[in-house]
Amino acid sequence: MARWTPERWRKLRVKTGFSIYYVLFLLFIYGPMIAMFILSFQGRRGGTSFPMRGWSLYWWNKLLEPSTVGDLQGAMGRSIVLALIVMVITALFSTMLAMAFRHKFRFSNALFYTILAGLMVPGVLLSLGLATLMRQLGLSPSWYTSALAVHVVWALPFGFLVMMAVFNRFDASLEEAARDMGADEWTVFKEVTLPLITPGIVAAGLFGFTLSYDEFARTTLLSGEFNTLPLDINASMTQRIRPTLFALGTISTLFSLFMIGLFLAIYTILYRRSH
Amino acid sequence: MTEVTGTHHPGLIGSQPTPDESVVRAKVVRPQEGFSPGWLIAPATLWLIVFLVVPLVSIIVFSFWKSTPHGMIPELSFKSYFEYFFTEGFFEPGSDRFLLPSIFIRTLGSTIYFTLVVMLLCLIVGYPIAYFLAMQVQAFKWQLALFLLCMVPFWTSYLIRAVAWLPMLGRRGLINQALVGMGIVDKPVSFLFYSEFGYTMALVQIYVVLCIGPIFFSLAKIDKAIIEAAIDMGATPFQIFREIIGPLSLPGVAIGMIFIFVMIMGEFATAVVVYGGKTSTTGTVILNYYGIANYPFAAVNALMLMVAMVIGIIVILRIVDIRKEL
Image 1 (cartoon, rainbow over the protein chains, first blue to last red):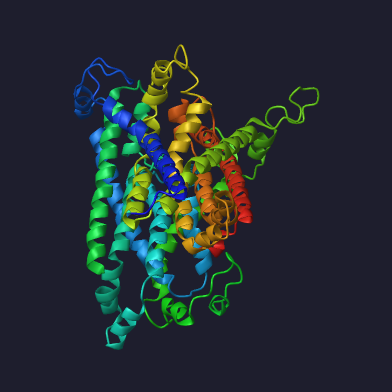
Image 2: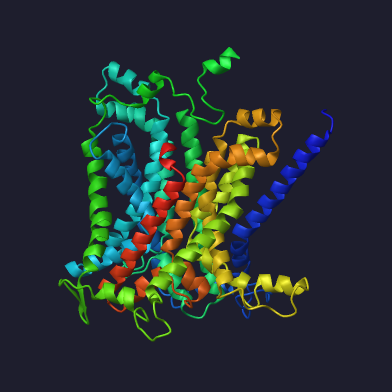
């Protein structure tokens, strides 16, 4: 057992201070959400702030009634379908792009910055540009065309950077060994490359799914006739705010958390298997 | 002593030794091997050109078109630019608003101001967290777990996180109740919600996680031996921070600041939810003009926002060259 020198005491004090700060920080970023969770169980006569006037599932039940907040179930369904499509396209595109960037090719710099521009350009600009353009061309926007298009533009840089990091640490000699043994390109990819990069593809997919599922700014002008879930939530903000909105926020956040957990679990399993 | 000089260290924090040539070569695939890059990039490139490059270019084109009550027509017109720069006061001799920038420029100015304030606050709040995770937490498992705990909100909806501020900031919100309960104020204060204060706080809470990641990564890359050496030479904690940790974490700070900068410059949802639409950011102005079908004017506002952002990013990159880090 080491002696308690002044130096050790000082280090312990510093560490304790930082730990307390960390806990306060967690309270800051999670506190409002937790307050929202609790208030969604507000009693029938309660309002949107504390104190609680009894506990009930009244506002949760209201979510199931079709008239309260627009077409809620429909919006949620559309958001999930859209997020799944974006997930697949993002995972596919970012893998293909990162594989291409292992070679030197012309305009690779320009392409690199164009991909990153998808992250840098504000959603409202992209929304405005595409919406005006489609209007001039006489095309009508819809969630599965124009909204899908900009969601992929938004999620792609994140997936791409993940896959770039994966290939940065990739040992190409494994592929060369397979080639030396006479495997063709498809076999090399299927048998050697793919199993090793699958965890990365899952991580890229996570970005695709969650970024699309939560996206609001880019969808604003481009979802067309039917709303996605964030648009529906925003629309219900314009009416009188009731605890139903908190129930909606809670269910949506819980769904996000569930998806993150699911992705992390798949990632961990695949990661262990590939090593 | 000879060993130290032999490993080619020009300075304590100077350039790192270049990796062995065989390591570098292993990462580059020989040209004839693997799938051809052309086919790999074709679908994504096409997608980005059609849905990113063309819309942005069309904003520039549309900003020169003529606005009519029935939409816009392809006729060269500088009216939108004229309106943008000269509305209200500018060059009106005798007016007390002489030389006052137009309302749109002032909106852009206040958007930039707010963005800078939030960036600074995010840095102040977020840096110690990244420092704690990278320097104070020893076990890698804990580091990862605590880091993920900070990052989870990034994968949830920012709209809902803005909504979640409602029960906190209102007149009867939690913060007011706490203030009254602790006897700090007699009656609930109203400056919390639908105010700059509440808006700033919500923005910091929503976007601070974006700068923790990059700062954490650049702090984690710092060789602990350098810090040990500095301690052995008798450096104070402040000196260590100023001479080693601060400079070495600058690239992470720059990337984090760019993230927050681009997110908040185009921000409008939080402004609507938390500020109750009482304020206008350039984002809300763009949407309002789109709403009344004055597309060229919305395009001019969007273009000016883009120009301001490009300048901002260039300024940040001038201060810190992050390309060396990528």
